[in-house]
Length: 91
Image 1 (cartoon, rainbow, N blue to C red):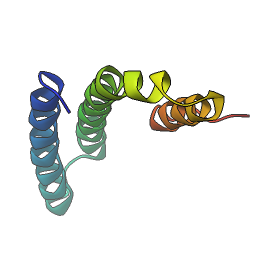
Image 2: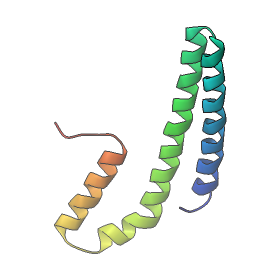
Image 3: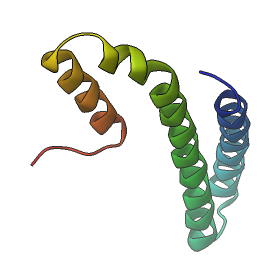
Image 4: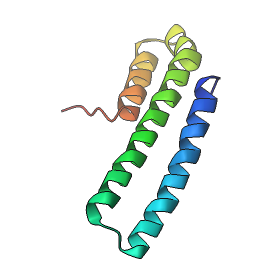
């Protein structure tokens, strides 16, 4: 990964780790379910944003290599890789 995506991804992952620790404590204490659900959504948002940074870095650093070399099959494999990472499935 390259900066600034690497540093942004690491920052978000550290925040998400703290979020998970807080969630565990909230559940152990028996906090209100909707408060827990709201915090879960905040953690999910951090992880989604982290995935965005990882994919952005990947496209910038690896796409030229993957798309510039090889034939159609290599390009299709790269496209499939991106689609899986974006959680887009064929129907």
